[in-house]
Amino acid sequence: MIKSTGGSLGRQLYRMTWPMLIGVLAIMSSQMVDSAFIGQLGTQPLAAVGFTIPVYQLIIGIQVGLGIATTTIISTALGAGKQGEARQLGSLVLATGGGVVLLLCLLVWAGQQEIVFRLGASGSLLPLVREYWLPWLFSCWLGAMLYFGYSLFRAYGETLLPGLVMVLTSLINVVLDPLFIFTLDMGLAGAAWATVCAFGAGCVVIFTGLLRRRLIRLPRHTARIRSGLTRLLSFMLPSTLSQLVPPLSAMLATALVAVHGEHAVAAWGLGSRIELLSIVVVLVLTMAMPPMIGRLRGSKDMEQIRQLVRTAMTFVLLWQLALALLLVVVSVPLSHVLTSDGTTAAILSGYLWRVPLSYGAMGVCMILVSACNAMGMPRLALVMSALRLLVCYLPLLWLGSMLDGLNGLLLGAMAGNLLAGLMSWHLYRSWCIKAGPASGRAAAKAGF
Image (cartoon, rainbow, N blue to C red; front, side, top):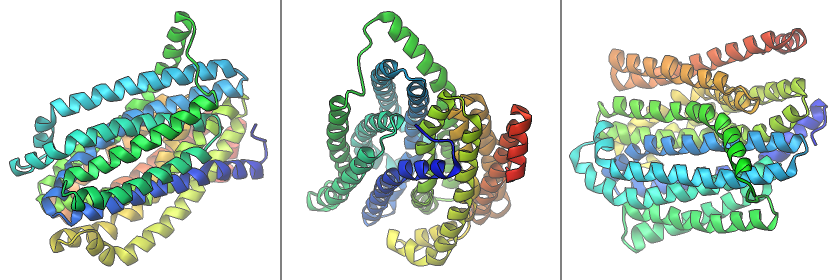
């Protein structure tokens, strides 16, 4: 159980975070290696992958929404001492999540042509998309099942095994990528099949661990299933909606970028992958914090929750600023490493010395969305997500593109993230003040 001192909270957050940080960093690094290999195939394969990113973010949004619901309800049950109920909820999570993501993947496969055309792809890219999307969607389903397994372990405060499995799957992916893409001459599809093999191996390990540790148990009565599904859906629906806003906005952003040509889409796709790698610490914190918040919520210690959120926000701002300055310095050489096309590299370089400067503000917004979901306030989290992307990011992206073309679009992305961070902080601070006089004074004194 988490102790109620600032130091112990920090140590607990560190213990929960570092194994996942190593694992997620390994996954992100393998994705960058994957992008580098694909980049050697030419601009069109890179552009084809660029058009899959917003669809992938849609799938990720659904699985993350369910993952948030998982850690919230299970960790809260554990904080209240209900071990049996937590195990039954775990089995419902796997069944529900697996079925929902499988249905989504089938729908995406059926509508692939309409999707890529709506995103602004040219007809010449459709054969590459067809070649890539079958194994890619299979890997998406396996990755979702793997993520649900990780979520169950995190709900119990266990992050070491998920972190190790992330490293394992990343190593398998990196080793198989050149073998499938070049040696076996599978081209773009080879990258997806390498991911299928890696995620398949990870699922074997993680689900064996769940069964051995008896973290899941089938509900014995229909009433328990209905009750569990009701609780799961009550958290899943709003948290999933808040997670769906980013991929939907990513689709619109990709359509805006596509106006500037295939080189711009290829560079934007690479930039999006660099963004994911750059905010890896934020992503890990959003995964590590919910189980801690759930247990504190189960024991009704709200002030410690707010202290935990303040600590995470401060760290994110300082970390992302340092990382942004590093990306500015290495923007030119890194761009040429990731793609052999000079035009794409030049656009990517411009991306890297503008947009990453706003990652700290974006990270604050992500931390607050995750915390609000875990505190049982998914509607506030949804408002934050919607304001970030539909009021701040996309309008400024469009405005920048209209005023100054691709250069203005990049500046608009930076300005949108900065404004979103400020708005999210204001909403959270207002909630702290309304939650109670003591909480409000503590938040104001800390500057949050």
